[in-house]
Image (cartoon, rainbow, N blue to C red; front, side, top):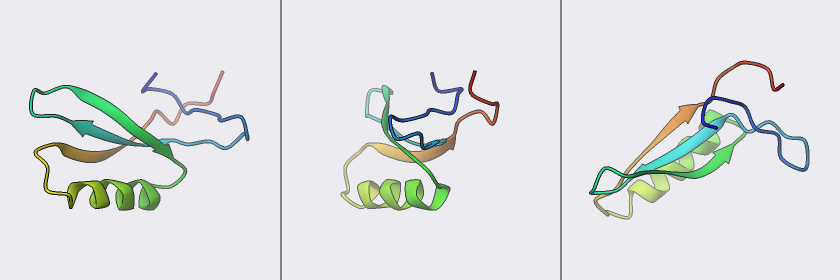
Length: 66
């Protein structure tokens, strides 16, 4: 589902993902956000905790929702 924009119950499109990778290489979606800036702020805040996990922001596909 990473390759599609997602509509929430409120109808908002949340195309920006924050992804976490743990020390074993497992990747998890932390959350979805409306803007890149909002997602980056979350990723930066989590990254400051000093854990060994990596956090980054990705955009889902720009294709229209079916």
